[in-house]
Image 1 (tube, rainbow, N blue to C red):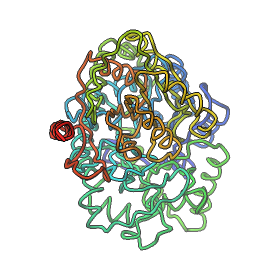
Image 2 (tube, one colour):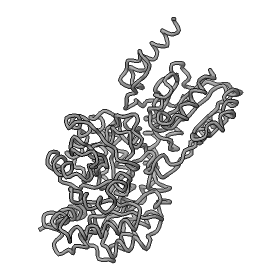
Image 3 (tube, rainbow, N blue to C red):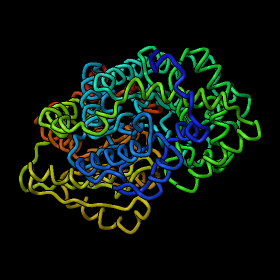
Image 4 (spheres, one colour):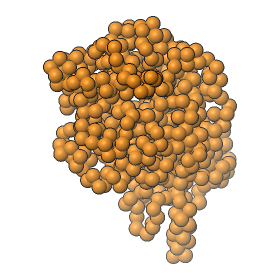
Length: 567
């Protein structure tokens, strides 16, 4: 009888079972004493890595092999699940030397299932070569709220069927590379204005609405064979009857909706239980036990050793008191072990050297360059500023905000100033100015003088519709009556904060290859081909379009310009 059909938990101790349902993280680029203790003494069978664990690809491969070796020596029956959130775009966690690929919304702007498949396959090949066998991706949230501070460009777009199609292509691409996939964040994190890393959001939609919008991509992703589904720390009162209960802790959401109605038989994974939506409400111990009891199979505790130990003890106590049944624990551990038996091997975990040849390969870099060029989106250009046509003596001013990592999940910082350097390669007369979005008044006079001296201003904003200071500065620059090109460097909704801007592009991210592709578009070396995968509400009257960037939108822009000139 195969391990896939028999009960793989037979003969395992309770402590071994507890270890299999936990996925933990740790700081540093080599195994710490704490992580080795968790693997060897507490039988933890899953590790989650972040950018903090990956300096470069060779160090990362050594790290994953070292972790697997420690598990093998400790007597683990199967290799560790080693995972990360390799969503691409602003969330790159494979270290220097890996290929940077566009994130979901940039791919949504291309809307090609084949390209999405090719990107996922390439990323999966690099992950597998580096010893990472599970990706907490794709994000298949439907981002239909411009004020969403945490999903935004991590989503493919706002149309449920587009998200479903591209999500399925991602699942298939990763599967072709042998990487385990995880759909997230169930039952949907796209229509909230609260980041669950910091608080518990509430979505008040009816079940009917969820069935028409949020659940559509999950239904298709499950049918496509996704291995796992990650839960959202969001309350859905229409499903649970309780505004204080996150979906992660709801048996109705996990058992009735996900298992019974959607027919999902794979692994249910929690989002990190150290997020404030859990820590500041029920706490790590109750959160761990209640998530397991509600139907989760793999519990993520991504950062803190003391909390990881608390979780182990909390599960033990819950079993002893009868609050949690051993049957539920065995069910969860069994799902983890069956997945390992099907997808992992010790030979691959410990000796897969040959595959490193694909990491950062010319083939992957060429694919990345092509996809970035296809994604850059010209939203509007009513004054015909693109492509740039300046005399050598005319100065371009590039203004951009100083940005640290934009959220807890984006732990790499990319220099937006690179855009200025890419422009300088094409037009020598450039001034580059950085401003602090939290202290604009201190830089205002310098920016004002620089605008006065410039023939053209290129201003990059980062989520300006959520940042009044950036929006205010753009309004001031527009009052100078100089030609202004606005660049949305992250979420594409910045135009909501300054709708009278006449030339507006979005790159969906400010990774170096995205900025280089943008520079090529600005100077007419390539045509902007991306189409905005979200709509922009509250645009001034007369702009009758579903979303900017579509062919009909460009025609509408020209008609409006002709009407203005005729008038």
